[in-house]
Length: 394
Image (cartoon, rainbow, N blue to C red; front, side, top):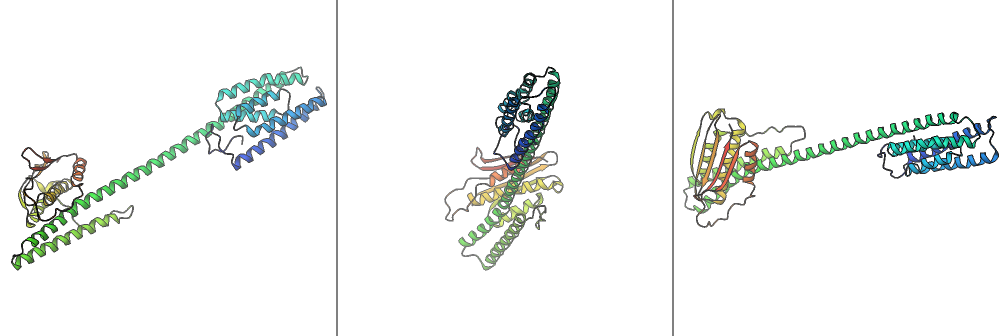
């Protein structure tokens, strides 16, 4: 009841709240009422009757002590010291002094409170002498006991509020950490979706563009080949739409629900089909695949190898059309998987504009291979060929 609201740290005084006004008013009323009772009992003591002057001084100083409690939050040491000094000539300020001492123990460290409590002893002796009492111990002992109780209560309140403040800070930090982890998870999921959209759709769209480009320049194709090319365009576009629908399903996924993909994930066995699709689009690709026990390859390993070949062939179609690419996939269990795609630089200028690119394909591959604890190298080699090579653990 003697301290500010629990929401503020012990040593920080904020604006006075409604609760603070109520507590301060109650402290003033209690201190004044009990002080008046003590003064009434003391002045009517037959053994040591007080003069009218002493009663007046006692009452005035006691009123000052009670009034000073209003500032005990902002200046606890000054108010407590004032109450001790005025208490040397006022029995009615005793309760106000104990309130001030308790507030000092709440708002400051224990040393100032102990100093003021030690001053209660000479203050009680002076008051006893001023009242004309010969037995000072009858005043000192109760005063020391009450001062110790006031300090103990204030220290208890301070420790409790410090504990609550610490627990509140921990809860706020835990909540902030949880929000940060959730944001990182959302960012990681967005990055994964963006990578999948790039890996899945870029290759399909590049094949559509290659098929359409072949039809554009080959004006004298027989009707059968035109129909075959148109069928390839339709099939490739249909596959691109299916894959786009699958990725959009991930974007629409509700929290706490797993999206069931309608398309099978690519494996090592799908790499020959990928190369054949690229060849049918008019690309020149030499392909070699020597993998022992390919059927037993883990799903993530096959998917990563497929995406590496897919991205490399897509880049060749965008930036080095007409070159002769070489794709090589070799490996075995316990020896790892090596994926290599190389092509010479493009020669001459193309009449058709290059397909647009985001520039993030190889970065996505780097992140994918790193997550798989593999090594990815890409760029021109000593012969001038552009090489994309990856070593994946198996």
